[in-house]
Image (cartoon, rainbow, N blue to C red; front, side, top):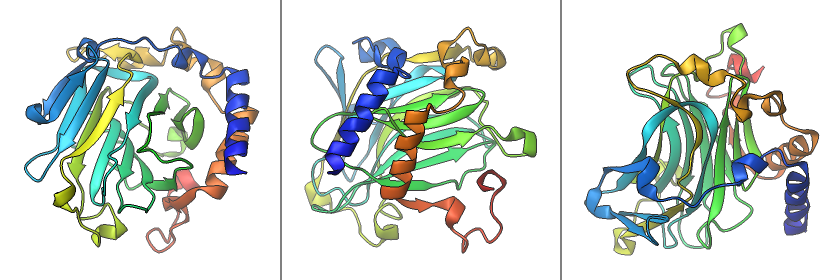
Length: 287
């Protein structure tokens, strides 16, 4: 029944066409927009640069990042996660700025023992303040095939999508003092050891006999407003000359909103907004 519901949801998205421009991706080479940022010997390019594999063992993880920084956009990556006993292993796809007061938008895939499901954690940093974690369990096995993960970022909202289904919405409430990411950010993807916290709160450790762990990535075109590091033109990136900033993308459509409520009701396992032990006084954005 769950798969039927999901199929209907995806049909609604396709008919609505809200993300149609973001889905018309070009098959371009990794090296056109990205570069290796660490673990050079653990990054493997294949299929004429159309696919990249990150590897990790007990000596190193690895990662790549965009050559440019961006001030808004609809960012996407197709990812297939490590398919072995992956407890303690974190595969991350995110946007991040530099400096202590940085902004950041995170997809973090938290590995698990064989037979146990992955958890997908999202987090949002604004001016160096994070601790806005939400976690969901996925309705498919992310190790078996590639799936598309997207981040919409404009002046009105940030939306995280999994295969075009919205799983998280963060509205711009800067008018009441809530932090909202505005700094130019680099796109990054990394594979690293997070066994101090990632699985069962750090109780389940990485089992290195299953190394090397491998995550695969596709889809290296970028729909984003480029910001030169030597300039301060990021505010121009909220211009409506960019299609992802137009009114159509200021809020979810009715069909997307139904999808989002379904995900929250059926698949969400943690939301910082409902954690009264951690936050006896609710954060402003949760009110």
